[in-house]
Image (tube, rainbow, N blue to C red; front, side):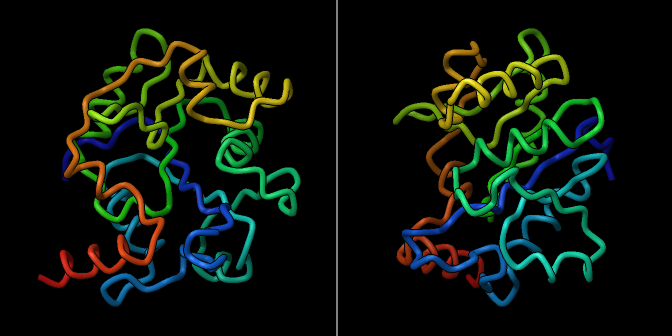
Length: 197
């Protein structure tokens, strides 16, 4: 095993999954394994610590021995920035790496690149040909207060906040980007085919 990145990864699993019919996709099986467990298995050898940002199916998580942080107002379904703000508020000082729960194929090189890019300005996210990808993103300890201030001021878009806060981007190929989200039934079916091939 290589050296783990000195960061607490936050798996963002608090969304409404509206394009998948409102299911809790964290627990939906992908190639025979719940999506959340697949993401955890990828993260564990790469980071020092990880926690879960979730608002549904909370009884599952203590049985797993996982640390779970809910949004300040879970019923509001305010999107990923709500989870990012809640975890920035609740967790001890340190860098945070925010990962979407549907990152079914997470390249190790991407996390290292984000860590390196965040070194100067404290913020980093991905960019592909079609534009910026706000998640995954690296938020250094010194920038967590900026995130909380933006949230308190009414910001709700991770992408807009990262742009305005001067995040550095790292290049992500289309193939890598495909492994970072599952928002439709077609995307889910394609991921199933790839993993079972």
